[in-house]
Image 1 (tube, rainbow, N blue to C red):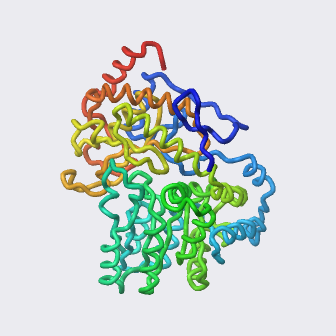
Image 2 (cartoon, rainbow, N blue to C red):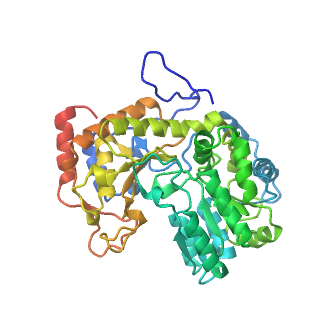
Image 3 (spheres, rainbow, N blue to C red):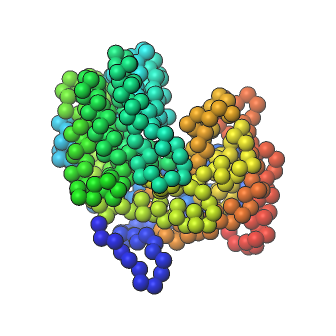
Length: 477
């Protein structure tokens, strides 16, 4: 990829697209933002989009489509059975991944449901480089369990390690040898979501698949975040290979690949692909039972047309570099101004280290949730809490993986501009200087502590933060 250098200013990301369609957004005043977050129970999931200026909750299903994708949606074959659109998407998947059989589902967690229903039995074990909530939930519902085998370097929030998503190979070998009889499959997550969107190296992926193959154990790749991971493999590990070559080498090593097209493919749906006809037929029965006819699987046919086009975009080096470039810029500017983030910058979004931002808030008072609420009050930006609310713990003094306590500021592709990021950076710098005002949160008495439940502030710190904002910014939004 050719790098654009600047003559007279500090480098910044350059948008490699032009805007064809726009959608109006709204920045409510700080007083309304305090009201809105109270109404939402201090839980950013519960905010309504009319009160959100920058929606950085997720990159799932909110990426901007190209004019080619929108045009393709208009020529979709809307047949219930045997649609030619299915045939078109199937051919594109075979072209890119080299897999023969394709099953559609309505989104990524539906793919995980199909996989668990087909392959997980009571007492089974699924090793993985790192856990992800929806995958673990489906495995647990079938009576199985999981074990995360992440290399310890992945849990170091600030480092120079380029591939924090790698397996600890010794732990993987030990589990494969000692628990072989009850392993349903090994799940390999490309783009490790819960540790800050950090990539896994191609070396670690291929080695894990090789170890599985030697023992007759199935390898399953979660490729939902593969797009950013491909960029990092290209730039940090294999610059001599094209994106398509990297993709094919990884795909050839895996028994089954699935992904959320809400992330990988710029559409809204889910995909399972394999070369094993017996596995395909077993899974197909569950697609028919739970998702829909096997040639649409609960997906809109129009979305399938869009995904077929979007998959070509995910093989384009310039296109897939845009998300990481914007994330890197946001992380670098925040770090430069004293805001601790997960480094090196990964994919998916910028992850703010809440425990360093608000060190005075104990784990039992949900520092990442508090910071997410404070960021919204200060800026109108909706991020996602990645800590004890999203991944509940039993004892806050014993730190499970969820207690990394991050606030994710996701980067939907081709949605926000550099000027909007600069606005967010400015507000976060101000918030850091006033971090002592931010207080904790708690669940109301009797709450089940579900990640979507309402919380309440401990004290009236949101009002105090808004008063300080108004003092410093006067009549500004």
